[in-house]
Length: 238
Length: 84
Image 1 (cartoon, rainbow over the protein chains, first blue to last red):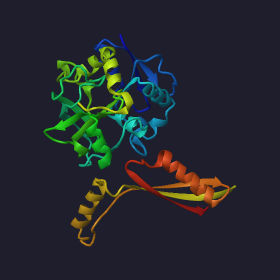
Image 2 (tube, chains in turn yellow, brown):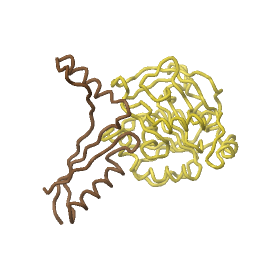
Image 3 (cartoon, chains in turn purple, red):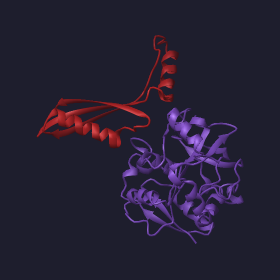
Image 4 (cartoon, rainbow over the protein chains, first blue to last red):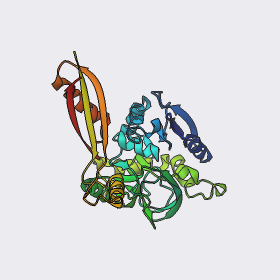
């Protein structure tokens, strides 16, 4: 049973759903308030969705300086697994734990609806139970979801196989290369804009997101393989 | 220590899509302001600070921009310092 710390910022609003999804997958999940400085021996740190600090200045810009983020960064540096969902993805980018940034949707509107994403990489701790190429239906709920990276950074992401999910059928927010989620070069830090925690059971309208949390729980089985692939900060691609 | 007023201008990088600027440009055209050829929208922050000198105030303000006020991936900033 893996220990999953769900970090709660002022303004997080998907924290309870995320905790539930992790527990439903068999993880030992618990909340960590953003002022804490210790993840309590977590195997996985999850930054949930919401509107930390009211999205003031930029989404995630203030949350990244919360005391808990030093522990999250240290966990990531040590190879620990980190997942950011929606606002959590924005925070990871602001913190520099993932490359790029998330900007205002191209259509300027807050979007809350299902989208379709293709799994582009199954060799991350959060996608190991998916097949590469699978298309998932997951909901989005964001105003700042346009992934932006300069052309060189985007080319590097593609070359290293760091695009984990890509929008298919339509690109809801104008994100670069239809990117819906990415990982870092070490593949232990992952960010996703859609909300897998909202699709973990038929009663919620679908369960395409459930295997993300099951992957997390099964993660120790793949941890070694992922570590070997990440040697030298290079990845051969998927 | 002296008091300074620091104005920080943060703009989305010119190469990136600025949908807000585009929407305002379209609205201005609809109102008959056909002479508008581009609109970009950023942020304007006014800080009141104390510092030993104007140069110190500017250096500190740039450090604030680098760490928090601007996102180095997507935004450029400029700093203007005046005696308060």
